[in-house]
Amino acid sequence: MKKYLAMFLALVMVFALAACGGGGGTTTPATPATPATPATPATPATPATPEADDTPDAGELVSAAFIDPLTQWSQYDALIAQIKSETDFAKRTDLMHQAEDILMATNCVIPIYYYNDIYLMKDYVSGIYSNPYATKFFMYGKMSNGSDTLRLQLSSEPDYLDPALNSSVDGACLAANSFSGLYTYDEAGNTVPACADSYTVSADGLTYTVTLKDGLKWSDGSDLTAEDFVYSWKRAASDDTAADYAYMFDNFKGFPNDLAVSAPDAKTFVFELNAPCAYMEDLMAFPTFYPVKQSAVEAYADWQTSPGGWCQDAGFVSNGAYICTGWNHDVSMTYEKNPYWYDADKVTINKLEYMLSADDTAIFAAYNAGNLDFADSVPTDEVASLLSNPEFYIVDELGTYYVAFNAKSSIFNGKTPEQAACMRTAFTILIDRDYICQNIGQTGQVAANSFIPLGMADGNGGVFKKDAEDGYFDAFAVNDDYDATVEQAITLLKAAGFKFGDDGKLSPETPIQLEYLTNTTSGHIAIAESIQQDLAAVGIELTIQQQDWNVFLEERKAGNFDFAREGWIADFNDPINMLEMWTTVSGNNDCQFGR
Image (cartoon, rainbow, N blue to C red; front, side, top):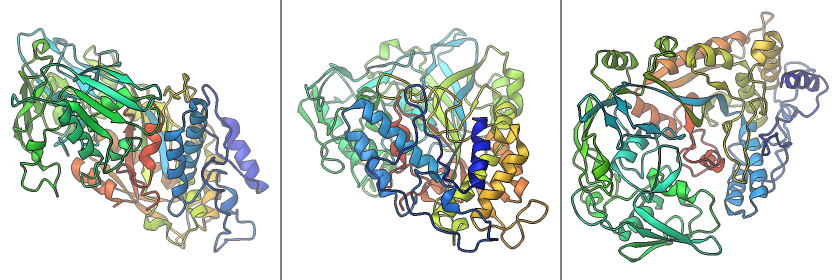
């Protein structure tokens, strides 16, 4: 990868086309190619106000895969649709590499490191487990200290408890312990039946017939039937619900408003797809596919305009291992064992007491004082001292911590799409990922140079990318050759129309001033401050705005930011999960592509 930087600079000097490297094949990177479905990339535009005759041409510095993320994004949407209908899995893998090429060519998505998860758990607690998608399961936990109450911290005030509307990791944890889908995950991370007893698939792979377990109940004691899944899946997919994850149903016949799901009888649930799906069990285990009780949802006065309102206070009906029986907003929540859950006889922790907080210093103090048995947040400055502590857990995950630009931000006003991409590329290469991993993360995070994480399956029996050297830029260039990397960033910014003084900093004539949005956890603030210092090397002025968790989520989703901290932990082990979220209509498209 170190060769890439030298090659890039040489290419800049001769004004050749510099194409960003693609993701892997099963083991090695694919050569970047023009996508099969999208049209030819936009004709490069000459910078409007070149600084001098030798000012680089922005159009010659973008990837061959580049398309305008605002006006040409329908090409990406079409490629994702092609991937989801492709039955040749080898070709499907190639198409996913092409989709990642397009995504990374925008440089709106700037990967920082590949995730792992950390938490603290007392030595008298066992049986709690986390899957590779950061969902934690408490229902089979054991406590050897004589207590039947687990005191824990997962997050601050949850945004949604309605499983169809949740889009946060902590919300998924709450959903997985209070609702049950057709499938779930065991301690080894494998999908196993939950409400389902079994299922069959038609010869063409398009029709699934699921047989439910006997005696399924809601937490109010009423029967849970196949009709409840019909209602719930149709609701989650519907335009009226506007769920962020509705796009997960777009391979279903009738999506979005006439989903092909049916209940021939109380125990039989049938659904039909447009194309075979290799990860269907993972979808059946995902919260968006959990059942909700129609009468409970629609008892809420404003259920049509506020679809998640029915479970914004304690006492709502669910069907999982625990029932929410108490909720002191922004302070605490209480969940108690659901006697009607299908596996209730295996639940020995009868109560979960949640501390709602984003103050990791206060959380750490509560854990050390013996007031918490489980803490999902640790202050950055305490991590090093905990590495040898047997109560400190580091769990591998499939996900990427990244930062992102709003493609519609006013900082790109007056720039061609290619100039805007050059601006963002300059930001990308100036960030010292090694410092962030070693001094802020501290738990073995791997510096990232692509959005799809290391080790993710490729959907064709292989690994999409397993070598950290395979990616779209040199994640260590700023460490290995600082001066050359800064010079490369200056070249990119000059191509975008910016002027520089003799000191190598942006001229007051053409400043770059922008705001970085983040939530308030200490690790996120430390990363923001590190990036702020890195960008100052060329005179970029970054201010940091901290927001409470729920406000932060909504502002990002609405596109009310220039530059923001992001993170995506996969929902299942297939690259499409990390690619389909960027379609124009996706509720998780924070970059505002195509809008």
